[in-house]
Each structure stands twice: as structure tokens, then as C-alpha cells.
Length: 156
Image 1 (cartoon, rainbow, N blue to C red):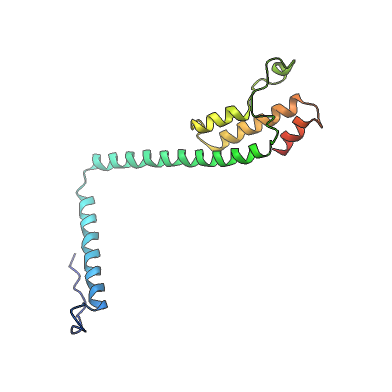
Image 2 (cartoon, rainbow, N blue to C red):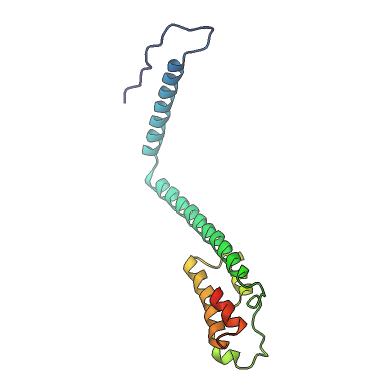
């Protein structure tokens, strides 16, 4: 590719400061040179190196996705926990509660969900939402309608 010639510059203005168009022309030439260097360097990269770079970029993207899901889960969890001001679902249901184990096969509470979020166990928002829905459905299945537990579960 032919080098870019700067525009003809006007005679020097006051002092030794280059004019604005002259500075702009130099920047254009520098940018064109840098772009051609990047293209040239990419053309000389061997295929296995490109593959390695692609793998590294994929890992970086996966890490960013995982972090974004974790941050989203944290925010949603805080909002859900605010809807339980009495902290009814903060801890697991005691084993002493009669009949709970026969009705609820997969017990879960906000404490367990919180630990999973902090340990980045949720790979998708859907998995997090499934656990939050499980918490509510467990409360609605075991507790009688109209109780504080079922009202709070519906509110969540």
C-alpha cells in the first residue's frame, strides 16, 4: 500500500507551533502506519498462534460471563431477601418440623442460595431463578394458605 502523503502545509503561523491541519495530517499518517503494522503483524501470525489466541479470548469471555451472572444473582438475591423482612426463609427448616421431609423433597433456603451465589455455583440466571422458585414452591406446598409463610412466599 502506498504511504499517505500529508496535505501541503500552510506557511508557519505565529511562533513555532505547527498549524492544526499540519498536526492532523501527522496524526493521520501515524494512524495509517499503525494500522498497516497491525494488519502486517496479523498476517504473519501462524495458524496455531491464532488458535491459541482464540482459546485465550474464549476463556476471558467465559470468565466475564460467569462474573456477570454472579453480579446479577447478587443483586436479585438482595431484592428477594428484602421481601422477607422477618427472615422466615433465611435458614433451613428445622428437622423437628413434623411432615416437612415427606412434603418437601428438595429443601432450600436463602442461606444456601447465598452460599451458591458467593461460590459462583450458578452458571446461568435460569439456575438461580429455579432455586428461588423452588424456595417459594416449597413454602407454598407445606404451609397452609393465608399463613405468614405462604403470604411471604407469594410476595417473594
